[in-house]
Image (cartoon, rainbow, N blue to C red; front, top):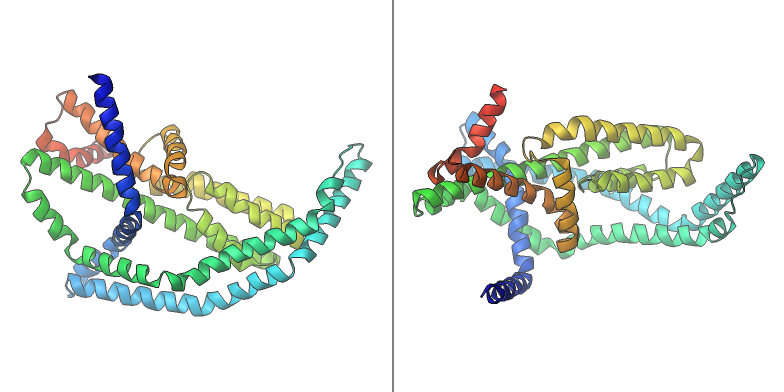
Length: 360
C-alpha cells in the first residue's frame, strides 16, 4: 500500500508538473503582474492616503509617472548604450590583441622574478577569443534590447493585470477568505502575509540593491576613464539582483574590460568595486532583506542550489522568497503542534513575531 501510494503520488506530481509546463507562459505573466503590483503597492497606498485621490486615480498617477520616467531614461540612455555595444563589437579583436600583449608582459615579469609560467597557449589565441566573446556578449545584450518590441503584447498584459490587482486585489482577496472556514481563512491570510513579506520585500530589496550597485559602478568607472562604463554599469546592476552568485558574476566583465581598456587603473577599480560590494552585501542588504526573509544563510544557500537544479535561473531568483514562506509555515506548524497557537490564530503569527522582536 505504501509503495502504491508513493507511485500514485509521483504520477500525480508528474502530471501536475507537465500541466503547469503547458501553461507556464501564462503563469509567468501573472507572476510578473503580481510582482509589479507588489512593487507599486506601497507607493499607490501612500498617494491614496496623503492626497484626495481615490485608489483608482492613485494607480493612474503612478502609471503615468512610471511611463514618463521610462521614456526619459530610454531617450537619454539607450542611444549611448547601443553606440557602446556597437563599438565593443567593432573593437573586440583590437582589445584581444592588447590583452595578448599584456599577458606576454606579465609572463616576462614573472620570468624575471624566477617564476616559470607558460602563458603562450593562452595569449596566443586571446585576440580571436576576446573578439568572439565581445561580439557574443554585445549580441546578447542587443538581443535583449531588440526583443522588447517582440514582447510588447505580454508587457501590456502584465501592466493591465497589475493595474487591476492594485485596484481590486485586496477586495477580491477578502471576498475569497470570507467564504472559507475561520481556520482556513486565517491560514490563507498567513499565506498572503508571508508572500507579501517574502516576495514583495525580496523583489523590492533586490531592485534597490541592483540600482545602487549600477549607479555606484558607473560613478567608479566614468571618472577613471574605463571604456563602456554605461554597458558595464547596466549589466552589473542587473546581475547584482541574482542572489549569492550575482556579485561574483557582476565583477567579471568590469575587471575584464578594465584589464584590457585601462590596465593602469585595474587595481583601483578592483578595490573600489570590491568595497562597494562589501558595503552593499554586509551593511545595506541585511537591513533590506532581514525583515522579509528571516532565515539562516545556510538554508538560503540550500534553497538556491535546489532552485537552480529544479528551475534554472528562475529557480535561483525565486528560491529565497519561497524559502521565506516555507520558513514561516514551518514555524506555524511547530507552534500549532506544541499547542502555542490554534488554527484561527494563524494570521497573527507574523505580527506576534514582530512584537516579540521589538520587545527584545
